[in-house]
Structure formats: C-alpha cells, structure tokens
Image 1 (cartoon, rainbow, N blue to C red):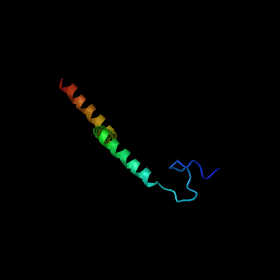
Image 2 (image 1 turned 45 degrees about the horizontal axis):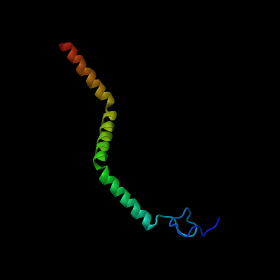
Image 3 (image 1 turned 30 degrees about the vertical axis):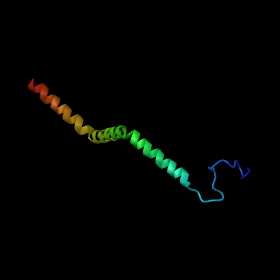
Image 4 (image 1 turned 120 degrees about the vertical axis):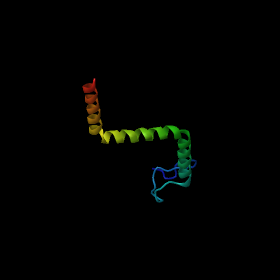
Length: 80
C-alpha cells in the first residue's frame, strides 16, 4: 500500500508512524457536535432520563406494586 496517499486528506486509517489518538480537529468537531446535540435535544433528553428513571423504579418494585394494587382492589370489592 502506498503510504503517501492523497495529499489533501487530513485523516488516517492507521497509526503506524505516530501514536494513536484523536487529532485536535477531531476533538473539536466532536465537542461541537455534542454541544449542538445537547442544546437541540435538551428537553427530549430530560424526558428520556425521567422515563428511564421511572422505568427502573417501577421494575425494581413490580411485585410490591402488583401486590398493593391487588390488595386495594380486593378491599374495594369487599366494601362495595
């Protein structure tokens, strides 16, 4: 494989002659992308976090929740 490659390309697929790692341009592009995503999807991200929290909370207590619902329904039917 020709190691010279295209002179206009500013990225590499291997790191044979240098240590691997992101170049400053990649890092700044990643930071910019994450900043834009956070700003654009801030509200949606907050809703997703809340939904995930509620899902974990309810899943961990599913037996207790179902038992409580069954107990309350039983009491309700006995009262009526």
